Length: 214
Ligand SMILES: [Fe+2]
Ligand SMILES: [Fe+2]
Image 1: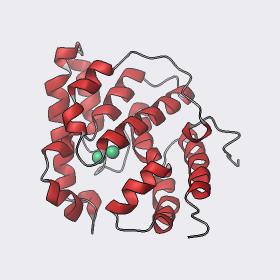
Image 2: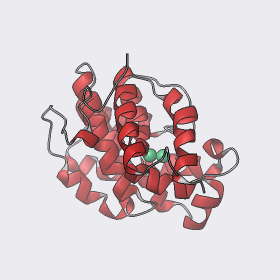
Image 3: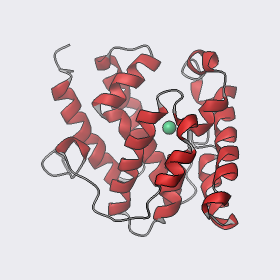
Image 4: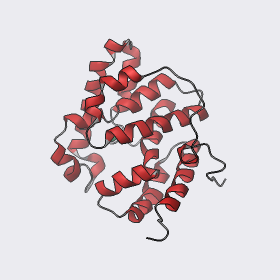
């Protein structure tokens, strides 16, 4: 099946997710400071919206788990040494670097610190931290909620904002980074809904950033 901007409801076409879910503004505010590191105040809201698009396609997934996990998944970067984030976190075998494991552990710690005061029960917090733990360094997904978070974490990279930030992290030009998206990131997507969103988003980014030209 070929996906186009016309056939897929997504950010690039000016669409919003259709579902209605609990307001999580109190949680956003609780982690505002941790979200200010490493571009997470751009990455996380965008990935959060993609998670909601994925939830539209997967009503069997628990929306509170998915939305809470994607919101918190990278907050742990705020407790990592900034200078090592870009040297160790994005080079060589970056997926397995110590700093990546540390950002997952610290993300779980932040979840355990902020969620109880916002009314989350123990069982829900455990499901959230099970997803945050290993979200970059573990290759397999354990549940539909885990799969949607993993896909949403990647989907923002297909947008112009994602290409802008991530191409700098990987020290590539936008068109070199597009090849990484097509060859590495796209094949990692788990759900068909994510492949549809990624295809439509990338088509728009190629147009806007003139990636077929420069
Ligand atoms: Fe991460
Ligand atoms: Fe992330």
